[in-house]
Length: 299
Ligand code: B12
Image (cartoon, rainbow, N blue to C red; front, side, top):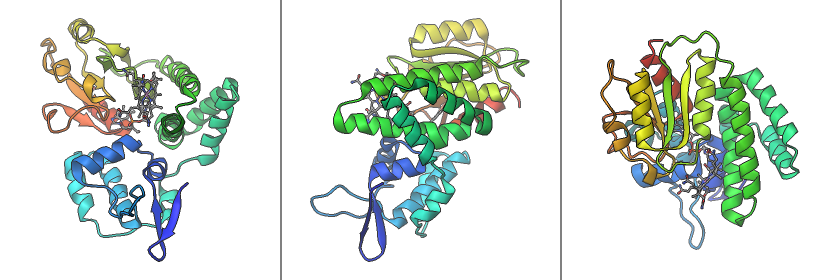
C-alpha cells in the first residue's frame, strides 16, 4: 500500500490504496470526486493527488451512509460536513480487507492454480456468506487485478480466469435455491453491450441465500429480451446492471411493457446517472440491491 508521511504526521494515500482499503472501485472514487466534490484535498506539484486522513473520514462516512440506504447525493452532503480525521489503523479495523486471502488468490491465479482459487472461494462463502466475501475478498481482488492490467497492459488472461471461476462458484450457490419465497422470479440483466456481469452473479447468489429465486438474463442483454421476459414472467422486481455509462440507456426501464402488478425497477452500477434516473431505485451496493429486492417480494 502506498502510504506517505508528509505534512508532519499525516498519512497520504493514493486513489488505488484508498480503493483497496474501502472496497470501493477507483472509478467510483473518481465519480464521487467529479460528481459530489468528495475528492482528495491535498495537492503536491508534479504528483498525483493524495487523500489525507480528513478526506478518508468523509469517504468512510459516504460509504457507511450509502450502505445504510441513503441516496448518494444526500450522503455526499452529510459526508462533506464531517469534520473528523481517521487513522489508517481504524480503516483497517473497520473495513476489513482480507489481504492474506486476496494475495493468495492473486498468486494462485498467476500460477494458473484454479483449483486453489475455487476451494478458497467455496470455503469463504460457506463461512461468511456472499455479501461479506464479495466486499472483503472478491471486490479487492477485482480492483487489484483491474489496476494491474491498467498499469501494465498485461494479465488479461488472469482477469478472464478469475471472472470464469467466480461465475462458476456463484452459479453453484444460485442453483441451490430451494423452496423460494417468491412465486414469480426476479429478473436480472446486464444491459446493452455490458459484458461486466460479475456483480449480477454475486446478486443472484446473495438473493438465493435469502430464499429469493431469479431469472438470470446475464451479460449483453438487449432491450427486446428484457421486455419479452417482463411480459412473460410479470416479475416483482427487475434489476438492471450497467458498469459503463454508454450501456446505461434509460429506455431499458422506461419503455418496458406494462404488467400488473408493476415490477420494482432497481438499477445498479456506476454507469447509471443518478440525476437522470430519479424515477427508479438506483442502488450503490450489493446489500442495498438485496434490500430493495427483498421489499419488492414482500419480505
Ligand atoms: C472483470 C473485468 C472485466 C471482464 C468482465 C467479465 C464479467 N463476466 O463480468 C472482461 C474481461 C469481459 C472485461 C471487459 C472489458 N473491460 Co473490464 N474490468 C473488469 C474488472 C477487473 C472487474 C469488473 C467488476 O466486476 N467490478 C465489480 C466491482 C469491483 O466494481 P464496481 O462495478 O465499481 O462495483 C462497485 C459499485 O458499482 C457498487 N454497486 C453499485 N450497485 C451495485 C449493485 C450490485 C448488485 C453490486 C454487487 C454492486 C453494486 O458496488 C461495487 C463494489 O461492491 C474491472 C476493474 C474494476 N475496478 O472494476 C475492469 C474494468 C471495469 N474494465 C474496463 C474496461 C475498459 C473494459 C473493456 C472496455 C476492455 C476492452 N478494451 O475490451 C471491456 C468492456 C466490454 C464491455 N462492452 O462491457 C475498465 C472500465 C473503465 C471505465 N470506467 O471506463 C475497468 C475499470 C478496468 C480499468 N482499470 O481500466 N472486463
